[in-house]
Length: 167
Image 1 (cartoon, rainbow, N blue to C red):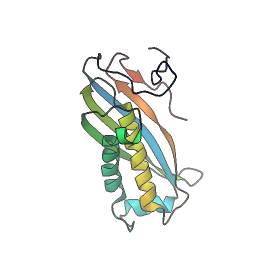
Image 2: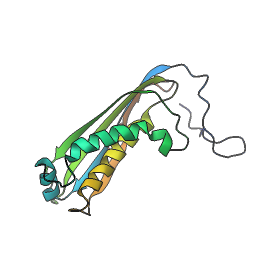
Image 3: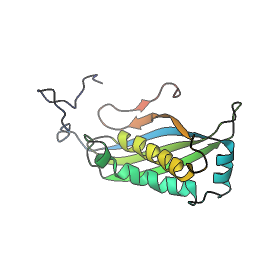
């Protein structure tokens, strides 16, 4: 795999990479992110006691919509025919610092000339932002972390799996 940056033309200006010579392959990417909150906030989410509605159901739909909107948000991303987006949540009980969390995993798939890493990361990020939006009235201290790519497959660069956990 090359370490060369490909989003610059010969004048050093931004460009969308030309993928027209690439072959269509099955591509898949999984990303993760964590939303940190007060234990009371997590309890209210689990109990369906958030005034705006079912937080995880709305965040799941928002994450899917986010993946589909990636080229509208990230200037150099190619519009893709996404064939699948799936979002999963893992509730993490309060730790020794009394911080609860929700881990988000998002997987995007396509068959095409370029990968879906950005779509997977965007899905996770939009789902996390939606959790914040739905809960900010009761917990303005909600924060995000550990957002990143876990694995990807397909294309010339093949399979990538993150070698260590996100910090």
